[in-house]
Length: 256
Image (cartoon, rainbow, N blue to C red; front, top):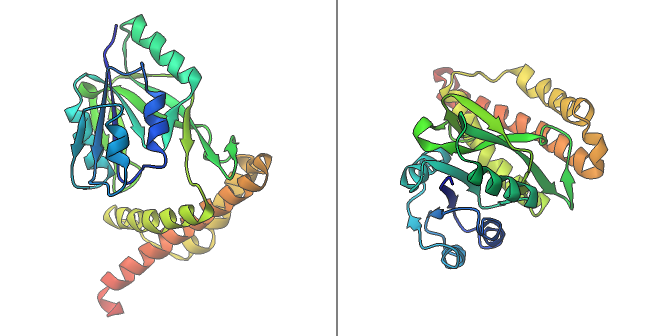
């Protein structure tokens, strides 16, 4: 039987992390939590499920998850965020996978479905949101920028059918707060990568993003939440490039 470690990086997640930990019961041989000095009851809740808790200052998603992966006791690692939990189908699949033993895969993609505005979002670019979350830590590492980190595995990857349940934002206000933070980080990543912000990115790309989500990816089938997701995706595109334009304008000698 395979041995499996689960890693969770978190900060002030007392409202959601218990459901995450509960869904892991009897599935993982180790639960390792790397907490960034939470000021709420997050660590206290985690101690009910594991003694493997490390407090470490935050240094970005990629770095924090790479550190957590390196501390895991077993080669096979399952990475979860504190607002995610295993669906019953995925739990059963993981238990079966552990008992089945070896194959030639070094990682597995898991479809993720988001709960937003009172319903599961089954369309737009939010679904199916395939995530490589189960992997052999000796066969890859975490890559990416300040946002959109991902574990890049060498060799063959398989796929699970069961879903990760993603409890994204409890309100529109929470989404907008994260949009403010993530759009700034994305703009810095764009700037580091040499991207430029122009009129096309601000005027044309946001409507195209809305059209892709609402029409091509059938967000209209998810009712008002699908419309909101599509509009927010367009807004996210606009603000990332607007902030990139601001960064580059401030860095330009002619703008000073």
